[in-house]
Each structure stands twice: as structure tokens, then as C-alpha cells.
Length: 393
Image 1 (cartoon, rainbow, N blue to C red):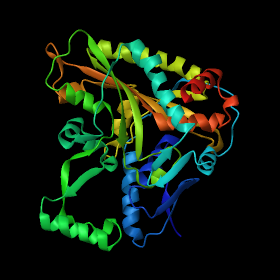
Image 2: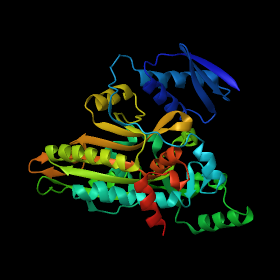
Image 3: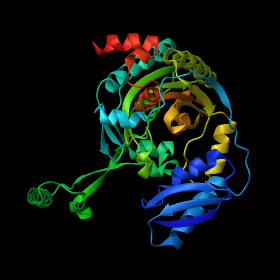
Image 4: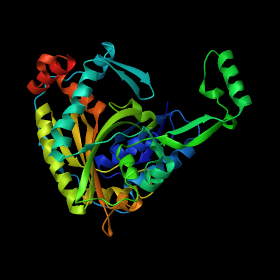
């Protein structure tokens, strides 16, 4: 194992966490990153250390920036709860075959985890989406490049994108492919020749709300606006970060989306956060809501992050993970202004509409809940215990 030491120019814990996250996209042979006083220590198995150092300094510059912008770091709401568990819940779930780690951030889920997923989704609908008057919609798990171009997703989060391919429409290519698979007793990725496949204009969908904006393209919103809810499968490639607790490649996202006049969107967002606070009480969870920023992979990371935090455009709900002595984000509240209204030409009169959303990572929520309460249902919060008994029947 080789070791590279870099001067630490990061100013906050949030910057260091973001640096750690982005570092893993440089090379899969980067194994770990730690702080020691004013030094960043990086352990790796890479021969070209000069090239590695150049890339690391680039990431460091993106995160820490060339100017000092004060990051707003505020906790807006917190529930402090004494929960019964402090054990490694992930190991227990795997040992009891309640979840299966299929590798590369892919998992299979069985009861009670799968029952809790269904319960959580229905409770979000009943306790938050319906009180806000949300209409239920269903969207595909694939999305067009054209749609994502309008959201600037490819320039803000290029590291997350999963592309799709198919064999070219050519009989000789299809027959040759079939023979290779038969002769090799299955398909292996090194058998796929770039000349035999075509990259499509579709990618795996990274967020539910993008389809909502596409469906409203070139339309005018009636009244003040409206609220939509949808649950779908989303995918984000996160390199070696998939080894982190709760960071999945393929996951379920329930969103409640607000589209309309700016005051309407702000009002709905505010109402949704109040409902969310009550929802946290139902789960009796040890959690907090704080301002946040997205993991932009851009040269102007610091400016974008500062703007998001300073304008309070993003809040995250974080659950405490006792055995890790850390937190993970399970939900986020987002305000976009008229960015998507303008991108998709969605109007109210002569003005582009504003948008916002409240998003839930269902698997993350349940991972975090079980990390606090464990698998003994008798120790679960009274309302959840009652509801899961009914759901499981």
C-alpha cells in the first residue's frame, strides 16, 4: 500500500467529507483518506503517483476554492431520542439473510426490511402527499439525454450517469455475440466489443422529479400551481462510495413535487417540512434537519454550494447511525426557483413557474431506522409496531 501526503487546505468538516466523496471518482485504486493535523493522507495502489497527485490537487482546489466563502451550516430541527441499538445492523441483516449484497451497490430485500419499505412509502403518501393534495403519477426508470440536458445534470453530476447500450441491428453481430456467450458459458464484460454496440439516447433516471417537468413541457399551469407525487427506481453510479452504509446504485425514491407560482411553491415547501416534522415524530427517530448542498462535480463547486446553502435551497433530513457514530441523509427538501420552469418552458401567464420537491430515499430511511431500533419488533416505536403488524399480514 502506497501513501501520498497532501497539505490540507480544506476549511470545514463538510468540505473534507465532500473531498473524500469526490476522491473516489479519480481512481478505484484509491483506498482511503484521512486527516492528520494539517495533512491529508491518501493510501492507494497506483503506480503513476505524479498523475494521481495532480488530480487530487485539482479536486482539492474545486472543493476548497480560491476564495473563502462562508458556508452556512445550520440545524433547523432536531429530535433527540434514546434508541435501543448500537450494533452493526448491516452485518446482522446480511447474516440473517434479510438483505443480500449483490455487489456494486445492488441489494435484495426480504421481510421485515421489504415490509418496512412498503409501509414507509404508504405512510409518506398518507401523512404528507395527500394532505398537500398531491396527484399520483408514474414515470419510467429511463430518461432521455435531451431531458437531462435541460436540467444541466450532465454538467453538474456527470459522475453519477449510467448510460445504456444495445447490440447494433446487424445479424452477423448478433449471431457472433450469441456464439461467444455460448462458448464462454455466459457473458463477461470484456467480451463486449465497442464496435458491436450502440449507445442509446437514454440513461438511467437519477431523480424522479425530472420526468414531471418533462411531462409539463410547453404548458401553462392552471391556478396557483399543483402538487404531484411519484415513486420510482433511480440509479446513480458512485464508484467506491457504494461501500458506504446505505449508498446504493439502484434505489427507490418517493418524491412530492411542487410546480406553480413562486409563492405557491414556497408555501407548499414550508407546509411539507411541517408535515415532515410530524412524520419524524411518528417514527420516534433520532434525527435532524439541516441546510445542505448537492455533490457538484464542477470547477465552480464552492460557488454553487455556497449559493445553495446561503439561499436555503436545500435541506437534508439526517438520521443518526449509532454504531458508526455518524449520520446519513434520508430525505431532502429542495427549492429550484424558476430554473426548471424556464428550461422546460412551463409558464403561469407571462412568467416561468417555480419548482420544488421533497424527496425520500426509501432504502436509506429503513437502513437508518433499523440501525437505531434493530430487528426486535417489540422494541420498535408503538405506532410503527402496530402498523407493521397489520402490513405484514
